[in-house]
Length: 276
Image (tube, rainbow, N blue to C red; front, top):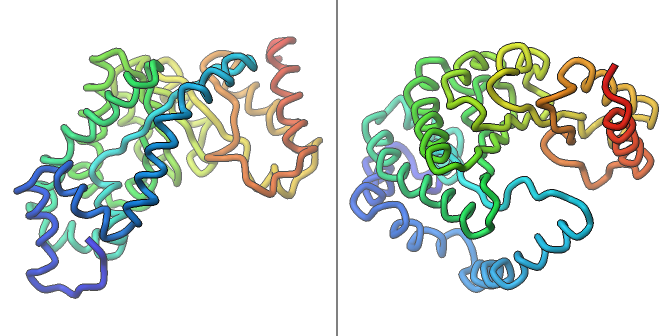
């Protein structure tokens, strides 16, 4: 899957191996090529040993864990492994080969999400999306290689009572209307600030909750008053129901403590008083 091997027939070997072996078997052979197996196993062992205790401590502190497991559509795994440039070229050079690999991967990735949700006891799973965003993929390719797999994954999870936390980085504004085709009240759309969250509220407010989207740059370089104002306006425009306040994508490591405190204080203030 590593990029930079040129444009010969050997480019398709990994795709063909996925089809021949299945995704789990292929992954067992692929991961040692890109990560230290001992390090990977140590990480898995730590998670297995400590995750229940971590969840318990969060609950004891008054926090509600939203999800504790992750998956993504085949597009994201292949694009990350192959490299963005080479994978996007593959979508044009050999679309049938890529689609065949995706079709084999999809059931295993759905099963991965279901297993994670069941193991944690939290009926929700993080479904990542970043390189498959509308801003990066032409409508023709998006309709062929992104949305059908996203729709099938969310539908399969919803059928088992699992909510999809759609962690969508980059700009998905172009195709917000298509997200109305996903099962209603089965998703939380988690945006990073690049998608127009107010447009998302307009298009999807009666079908899925929104999660976001205080800009990381504001938390790092803004002032407490600016943070408070952003949170207030966001809650006014996208609340009072169906909105989970959080940083866009993640709170940055260099976020100013005073700004994080202002974010939390504003959220509590609005929650206590009601959004006006």
